[in-house]
Image (cartoon, rainbow over all chains, first blue to last red; front, side, top):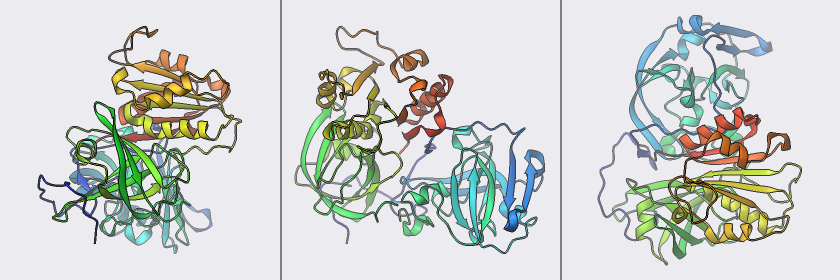
Length: 197
Length: 247
């Protein structure tokens, strides 16, 4: 039973059922980053998947996008309590990427330019659940929002959607990434409010 | 790893007007585990009909005390901050979760090898004020500077705490520099105007001193400061930045 705060909420509210608990809908797109914003030129951008024994599958900008871009519309939920509903994106589904990857490992550490890391189980990246996105709201992704390319895993809190993504490392067991080591939840499901560890 | 962050019942023990737009709120939390300077918490408000809203706020105090201070700025179209600034009264109860964040923190007595440069935009001064207060309370020898960009003298948070630093001639005092964007106090050496790269270079520790830099403010302010710091020759990869805005 939650504690009621006197006088709060007198104005009345209609809550959108697409909003997980503790979230508020925003129309703009707030920016949260741990440090400076890296600037990455698509000319030098590359994406790698590293598997057992250090095997690396590598794509450059054109070859990665040639894996198959698609449009998708999803809701995103940030652990700092804002959500954006019905946001339109364009990117390559990770299903296309993993058609070219042989691995027996079940967990993934995403790595970003600038050193950021975040962990996600492999089966939460497949079956149309995750993308490497290049555009949002019909425009190329700006650097402050993770451009030129970011991971998008909309069913988890948005810190899992690594900005400036540079690659995925297959790992045998789940391990904490940057924020997960700093007190955030290893998994991050917004519907059960897995915010903190 | 920070300890498990759980919900605590907090009671408002004092409030006062911080600026015309902001309020200082003192919360008593019997089972608060203490917090470090720079950490934040979540506040959760529940209405009679069960409707809930939560928001994150920086904590303006630090240490083991069971009483903590917040300074909340009113976001005009907001849902939580206008309630906290305008309606909350002494004796009211709400829920808090925390302390949160182990990255944007300063710990006294850790190392005085690197001087500390704090850069605040508007209400982004709150977690930095916690660091200034912790620095004084612990008589830490680390050289500290604060650059505080703010609209006008009326909008300055922590007026007394910052004046205490400016009035202290001792070597341990924090040097506080203000940049007023709209209006300056009488006799202020610079005309009102936004922070510029030149001014930033003038008012922050030189890159050669390898300062530990903390920047907090609205997203555009933080982005601008970070790119200027880079242009001024600072190693921005290890700058600690906290941004807010939008929600």
